[in-house]
Image (cartoon, rainbow, N blue to C red; front, side, top):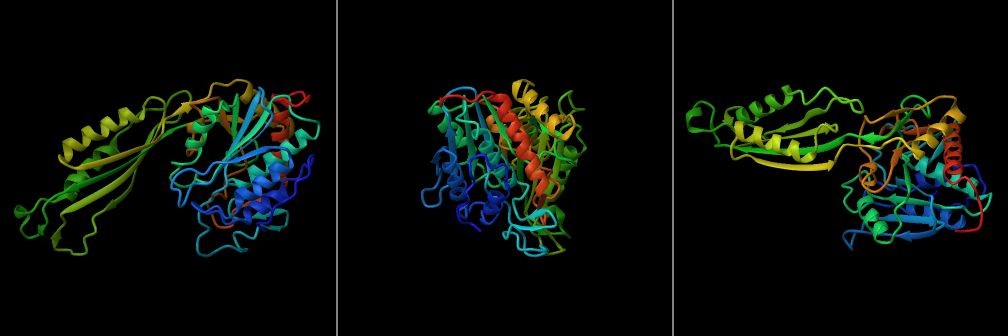
Length: 392
């Protein structure tokens, strides 16, 4: 299933490429041949494809940039070929077999997001059937979105900027639709911050607490204040920020021993009333009050951002309305995506398949949704690059 796929120019069918991509077991950080499959399909359509491995030379992160045309307007489709693990059991068909049953395509990555990649490539094929684009179409595809995301989209964007390849608009094919294809477009995302706090004390016997210093008590006091906080009431564009404690670990197998160490992890999803720096200061201040000397490690995964509606959002909404009969809601909730990096360079929107089965056993997408998504993407290309003409 991982063999190269032929996608004839003008083909509106994303299924062959979707099945070929799902057939590659590209569980982060492995590529499994997925980007070679994609590169072959894009070469056949006339794209110039550049492979951009970044990171450890012994095990680099696979990335791909492909472009056809050199002029503006320039629309870039961004996505990822890596997927989360399939899990040990529960799949009715093998997770990388790309099985079609009763009109539904099953497999890891079907909706997140190999299906969307195939839908866009098929849409590009349809658009290019009328002739070379007046403007440019590109794809920014990483193999490290589900992982640390250090040597993926961020590094490719730096490479694109250095080479004068930053697009006018960018569409990220994440599965944003909530219940029905086309019901939701993301025009922004909340920021995300992860924190790891370690409180040390003095180990001792529970019967002699005066001889020990219990770090658990101080950690719980710290976490109680954080859990009780209301960070804000939301904004016109964002829902309220949320702080969630994700783990508390002591590692103490004995019931009669005060441990010498306790740690916790937490995540904050924050709106545009905050930024990573202000939340970092807040966490350090609270930590210092309850647990002086504790170690606090913080990683800001991305800042909150909102894309101002404009040509990209207008064209996307019009294409969705035309082919589904519904006007999409523009939202900023849910998880993060690589749009948080792209927003630093150009207007960006997330739009893709229904995400109900992503990361779950029996991840799947109806074949008719794949076809409809490809039709919407093709309409978007026609609207943003409205006229074919001599090659740019």
